[in-house]
Image 1 (cartoon, one colour):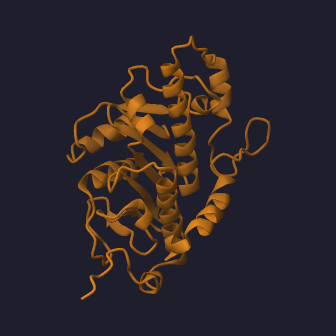
Image 2 (spheres, rainbow, N blue to C red; image 1 turned 60 degrees about the vertical axis):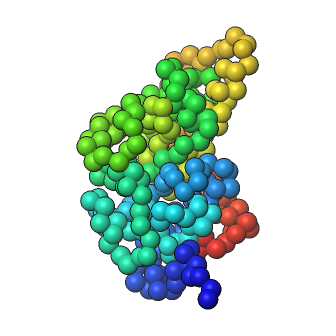
Length: 268
């Protein structure tokens, strides 16, 4: 007898029971998972990306625990509330550490529509550096003054840590979890992915530069402030010169086209 495919849930059954806005969020979030798999930003079945459900601020979508990121689809994402209760039918469990971290940020930051937590090699390396992220590159300076730091409390499975996670990220879009990894909180799924892309590039460059043994140059605080002030903004919010930054907005449609070319099954 053929075993049931744990990935497959009838997409028509899910789509017909939710709003068009929630279905689009599911499609975008599934694409975000696939992109992380494509770029190698995964840790087997661990780490998570979540998105708030439109029209239900206390609900968010999370990956089913036990599936690889390249198995995530719009229909098999799990909808839970801020207390960890599953609020729509699913055969899948969730990972407690993912619930603790993501419920903390969604519950404490109403602007956080999408939260990405990663354990990339470069992210873990920089999380172990006392200096944190250094202003060595333009990618790094995009985040000048926009990073919070959270000391490790071990495996993130204790509810009491949520208060400290919210305290340490404050109003910033990025947090480095010391000796652990990275976290970004975006106003859209596309913005969150773009922030993670640039953060990962900055961290890879920092690890490479420090490993070179060469004397390094650093961006001045004035330069870093100027670059950061023109980086990730509210969708449509103009910069000081009146222009609109493409960061976090223009990349997403192109990234969706890439995923459609590679494997459109994320839309199921």
